[in-house]
Image (cartoon, rainbow, N blue to C red):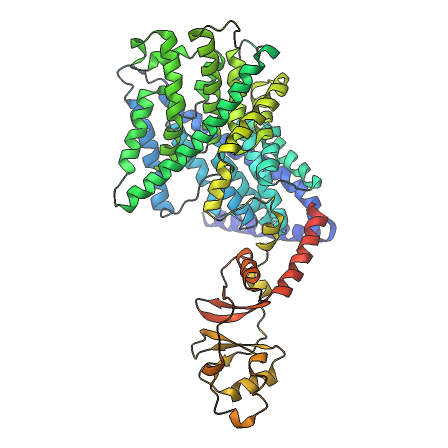
Length: 607
């Protein structure tokens, strides 16, 4: 054993030396932009493997439970999601002490606020937690955990190869695109998602790394796991312009459903906060309510792709038969009622899954809601109201999926390409473009911001498309902090101030006490009339001259907040403190100079 350990240590040292030599060689021969192309290949392959493992594990867990009959043993489907969420909560509590970030908003946070840096646990923890949550029946999707995992791997590869922060952001977006592409098998959808949601206005040069990462991850994922999620076995019905008025109505309904989903999540979150404020414990109530919903409505179990596949291939009757109440109603009305209840309660089931401790995303739930809306509309028209024009349920299901996803995430192009790739419905591009636009417009009228934007704003993140914020927050206060202002003791006299003036090249003087806490400032103009009167040097105390600065900057504030203080006060210099202790001054002109240099670099490299 010692010989093996010594051999491994020697090889580890040799590999590190070779990697350092490679980094030195590449600095001389390969530019950062060229290196990003090569790294995007490795990133795509790595994220593809991770996503494949996630899909395989989730489906393996689901397959272990799939043979459980629904009859009198259906109560097990009440228990499985509860077990999954309890396992995830226990893991997070003991391994991460409860500090576990999840959700698509944290991708934006890592890109916008941390320049592509993510905590190390994001590279593996979401795979485990989301596989257990969804595999055991949690009513959420796998895409958000995969996107966050891919983005964190992108930031890791950028740090590994010593790339600049701007390239870390690009590779984080490449990892996110690779995650979407791998989990759905939709490379174009992954690229468009990154461009539309994460990296709008990116330079054309960096579309290539996005394409490479998404393609590589899709190839790996398709080789290792099956991706026939939404394939109509009888082919796709043709689009006829006689269906157009009904599709327009479907677009409006999907926009309303997306707004309802977002409203329901907001209302439930506010309710939970009020209950917690009053000291009520809600965890077990949330868990058992989720289990009851799944027991009452079997389509709410898991991601929901089996339900969508059943609707596309007209096997929805099986779900009505699985429900313990389905045999009490006529088939036509039973199916319609099942779909309506599923449509109304799916947002609640998704919220309960995530808020109670599970790990999942909203992509799959929005597809679920849109598909159910489209199928319900066609089903009611054909079988309940008996319209003279038969509406193709498969087409309405697919277009509804795209419309709701476009409205909820404000990402119409992503929705169009993703549904076309998932189903092979490329000849639906015209109705897809029209209906997603209508759904998007309907949702924007009701709720101007997307779900991702709303969640990102709560944690202080923003869209990287806002170049002003992106450049400002990439400037560190410590990088532009000026320390050449001579401090004056608060307990001193005018003589101490005169000595400071003689030693300083600035016209502003911070006043600090004996412990270094900032008490105020003195400007040269404040004392110009008395500094040439030696008789006053020992008679005038500093405490009589000091006054409060226009504003004080905390060293941990963002540069965006700093510039807001400069704009609000009209000042050109502001003191910086760290827990009240004086650390230096910020100059507005110096910040603007650095901002201009970075803006020029941004335009040259990224457009």
